[in-house]
Length: 151
Image (cartoon, rainbow, N blue to C red; front, side):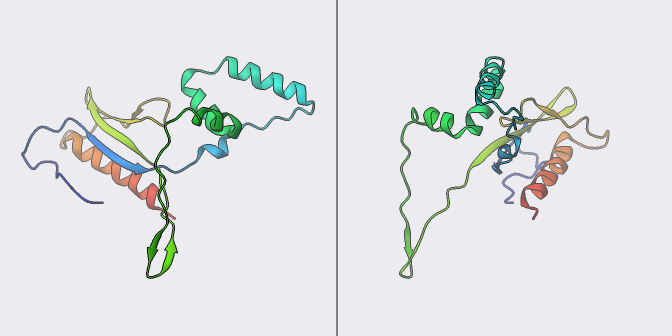
């Protein structure tokens, strides 16, 4: 982790932190398993479930159904493709890793985490009387970095 700003340096008031984390695909394990045997009843069940999805859940539904994801992504602008690089005469393909932003902000003496991949803000609670909100944020972020780099 590269420190760009050290809290307490006296530069300006800090209103929040924005971090870029590597996206780890967990959602594939959330696939719904249907125990019904009849194909038409499975389809009916899927249609009924889709009718009642909250708008936040539709992205998960699209991402978990390869056919829907392909149709959905067909409307996106084409991204430039990275060609394999040659290193010492050996062809190596760059890996395209996905990242996302997570923000940490103090609101009414409580630290909140704002992550667009989660349904709601996460309340990390108040910070101690003898510390700044940035101290609590640093601890929470270090735990998150530890989880992201473990194993």
